[in-house]
Image (cartoon, rainbow, N blue to C red; front, side):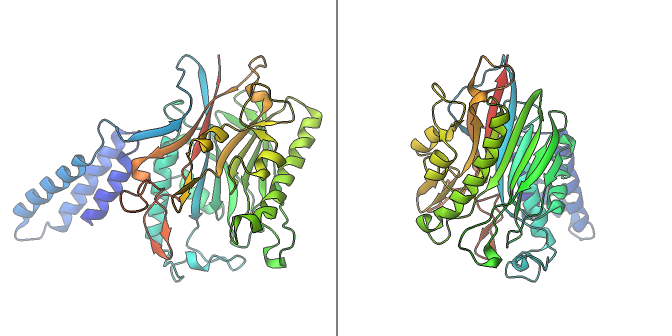
Length: 401
């Protein structure tokens, strides 16, 4: 019990957002442990020994100066500007523990191969809430205005996540549709209602060519139109098909998803050439791959960008060897937030692109071994690793005078 308490508190307090309420919870946990040894004949000795070890061990690992905080970025903060944060995070198999006979989620149940219990589910929630509570806080005290998420099973897990005590005060709202994905995982949008007001939302169905009936559909693309702190915006949350079977062999499936997103964007642009569009998601392709560079028409420079093009700041990150996930000593940058040209035009009113970031903290990474520095994943096969996600989150900062 002692080890679990220390582990949980290190995780929470390793974030940059420290609240007095967390210290109170620490003391309460310590008090509860005291009750376990209350009836012992050696109570005074155990009491003193436990107290010394517990608090010394905890605070010896508490990052008072937050020196472990790192964010990969290409721009410096501009404190004299109004700033707004947009984020995306692949939550890596955030399932509840209840079996859904309509999808293949048996392994994520207490009696499945992963022995996915309520304790594991709660631990997963606290890890994800810790990250979401800290993303973008260096730029906006309110945190992200909108957060796209992937690999979530249903509304239940989103409700549990947003009502977690670390996130409860943000009062995040949820937009989600169940898709026809065989594994039962979807995308969703979380938003702060003080900064974003949704008007319409729809699920864009992605059908895959040449697949059997069971696997003919992948995750839907979530489309949301709304008011982002004064700007009319169009948001697309994506999770394109994986590279299972090989990058080249699986490429047509991602091209199909990209084409559906592009077709819908084009219909928006026909009505308004300067529409503000945000495309985010785990695209399972890198910024320089054909599905993004050609199909979406996303480029890495906005000095001569055309209205029919998108600006992709992650191209420069990727060329410098940065990424959001790693495999066999190669970094990939699948998690991207891409903007329409209107966000780069400073003469237009409203919000403009300021900077892009890969959110990274040392507590989210493998601490040692051959995978040191990789995202600390939740699972290794059927063994629970106790990590956060196999992806790092990304976020962008918008600004206006």
